[in-house]
Image (cartoon, rainbow, N blue to C red; front, side):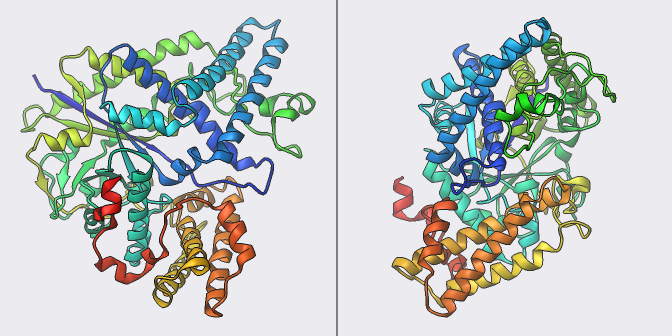
Length: 543
């Protein structure tokens, strides 16, 4: 009997959004929603499985920007305030829906879930979500890996290896600050790869990455096992190839499981449905409506006349869809059984925020899937490191430039009609930062802090989130962030060219964009590429 090996990789990432200059900031809700609806529910689910003695092996990429925000005292305080406000809203909803038992039951469930998340955060995490992930890693349930410092889409920076290296090196070193184990894998943002990237990754002791299926389809070499097995680059870097068909069962916006009419409708929320005089205390000033998480309608279909959400009916669907997923795995294996010379390995990767936030039932689907696998004789969950340690027979290939975006290329992040204009500015900023690092190496005191802040601004400028948001045209915030980071970098450049430091600006900038506290601006000096990776130095190895 073939052993079906399932390799699930979850990419948990959000752009760095932190605005201490305001008492409350709209885009900070992105973090709070993800914590409440995805990260804590996923953690609670895994701790529940652990408590029940159900084995599992999963991989999580936790981005440096997300780790910085999850460990930030100000944002943690604001998250608690956000949760307490939603508890109050839950109490009001339970009272308001006294004559509507079906919706009132949902309101009670939502309110209880908020309280359970707060209790878990306090009792199991001691207020620090990262500690709960770290514990699961130390106990052998999950593998935690890192990604680029600000989740930059690396193929667009292939002509700037010093910037690509800065993104990778910062990601690796930040991971070592937050977790007990070094990151042996690396999540390529948007699965973005270009030939030669493997050399920079190997420089930092990275053993594996995950690629899109287009990396094989467009390769000059013929893949012997398709996406049913990983490949290796010539330098020994393992590449785990995402199975597009299996991922689409969950990921597809038109045919995936989350589209089922019995599942909860994401976009119908009381933050938009209820009168302003009722909902105003729970949205943003002056009268900016937002999602509250209190949703009472099922998807139903392409109609405005929605059916009230049936929690139990949807819950039953998650089990059916978990069984269907494994059925599809078995059918795939059966179809290649006579031609495949190894047990298949299916790599399936997603954004972690899909589970719980975008797809409300996703966490329960995953829990059901894990339970079914634990009772199966032909299924097993593995991580990339599990596979590598088994010393498998792997084909050496040359992956092609690719991503998991539409068509497998870079269109989402480089679109002439929406966002391509930003790159001439980002490239100029990288060139200026490189110039500063080479003209003023090894500075001390204020100038060192000034230049360190400049490289933070440069890395933040490179974040893939801004071009993604501009492409989707969902908010003007991304354009403002790009403009702000460019202005900040130019301010440092102009001052350093005058041999001056703008201390007032520096203090404010360090307070606002306070991530990567141990960064060294010399990372942007091209001479740094010829030096040994800092992960091998005594200070870091001792950690």
